[in-house]
Length: 184
Length: 435
Image (tube, rainbow over all chains, first blue to last red; front, side, top):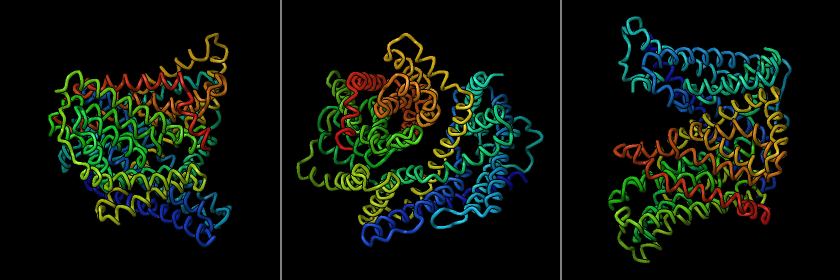
C-alpha cells in the first residue's frame, strides 16, 4: 500500500510540474507578445502585468512538490551525514513530521485566504481576473508537497522500524527521500 | 520573553534546523512563522503566512527569476556553452594552460546569458573537463578552474543573486547588473593570471594544445559568440537603456535563445522540455527560499534584531571599515555552510541597514561585495556547491584533489575583493555613467 502511495505521489508531482512548465512558458510568450504589440501596433495586451504575476505564482506553486520529490530544495547535510544511520532516520522522522504539519497548515491557510477573496469578489485591477482560483491551486501545490513529506516520513520510519514497515515495499535502493541519502 | 530574545532564539533554532538537514526554505518559513505568531498572535501569524506566500509568488518583479533561469537552461541544452568553449579553445588553447584560460573566458561569456554559478559550472564542467583530460591537464587544476570559473556566472549579468539582492533591498536590478560587469571581468583576468603563473612554474600542469588556424578561429567565432552577443545586447541593452523591465529583459533573452536555437536546429523537443522542467524545479526552489526569507524577515523585523544590531554597530568606536570587515568575515564563515542565495536572503535584512544606513556605504557596491564574498562559499569546504557539481561531472577525481586546486583561485577572489574595497568605483562607475 505504501508503495502504491509513493507511485501515486510521484505521478501527481510530475503532472503538476508539467502544468507549471506550461505556465512559465506562457509567461515568456505573453511578455514577448505584449512587447511586440506595444512597440509595433501601440496596443499592449490588457492586464499583462497581472497575468504574468498570477501565471508565475502557478508556475512556482505547482512545481514545489516535484522539486521536493527530486530533493531540489537546498539542505545542508554535512552534520547529519556524520551521524549513525538510525539516528539520522530518527531526526528525519521528527523534522519531516514537523514540516508536514507546517505545510498542511500553509495549504489550509491558503484555502481560507482564497475563500475570503471569493466571498469578497476580489479581482485583479485591470483585467478583472478573479484571484481566488489561483490561491486554491497554490493550496493544491502545497497539499501535494504534504504528500511528499508523508513519503519522507514513511522512508525514515522504514529505517527506524524495519520489521514493521517491510512487507510489500520497494527495495531500499529505490527510495527517494532523505532515507536514500542516509543509506548512501 | 522580550522580542529581542525571541529573535535570537529564533536564529539559533533556524541553525539547529539547518544542522538537522531541514531544507533552508522550510526552516526559514517555519521559524519565521512560529516566531511571528509568538510575538503577535497565531491568527496574525496564519494570515501573514498565506499573504506572504501569495504576494511573493505572484509578484511581477520576481517573475524575472523564472525568465533568466529559463534563458540559462535553454542556452545549456542548445549547446551554446559548447560552441563558446570551442571558440575560446581555438583562440588560446595552444598556450600552456590555454584550455583552463579558455574555460575562464567561456565561463564569463556564458555568464552573460546565464545567471547561476552552478549552471555555469555544470555547463563548463561537461564541456571543458573532457578536453582538458584529453590534453593531460592536471586533474586538480582542471576541476578547480571550472568550479571557480562558475562564480563568474553570478557576477556577470544576468545574475539571480543580484536579482534577489535587488528585490530584498529595493535597489535597481539594472544598476546591480551593470555594477557586476567590471568586477566580473576583473575576476576573470585574475583567474587567468593564476592559471598562467601556475602553468609557467610547472608546464606539466597544463600542456599546450594544438594551434588552430585563423580560418578555424573565425569559423568557431560564428558558432557561439555572435549569438551570445546579439542576445546580450538586445536583452541587457534593453534593460540598461530602460526599454524593458527586468522581467521583459529576461523574457526577451529566453525568447532570443529559443529563437536562435530553433533557427540553428540545435534544440530538439526533448531538450526543450528538459530546459523547462529544470526551470520549474530551480524557480520553485529559489522562490520558496524567497518566500521563506520574507516570512523570516517579518519575524526579525518585529523582534527588532536588525535595528538593535544597527544601533550597536553605530555605537562602536571602530572605524566603519573595521565593522565592514567583521561583517564580511561573518559572510565568509556562513558562506562555507549556507548556499549563496539563501545566505543573501537571510542576512540582507539584518546587515543592509547597518552597512548602508549606519556605516554609509554605497548599496550597489555592497551588493557586488556581498555577491563576491558569498561566491567564495561555493568553492570552499565543506559545502562548496560548485565543487560538488564538478565532482558529479568527474566522479573519478577525489574531492580533496578538487579542493586542493581551489586555493590559488580563492586567493584570486580575495585579491579581487581587496581591490574592490580599495577602489569601489570599479563597481559603481558603469551604473553612474550609463544610468
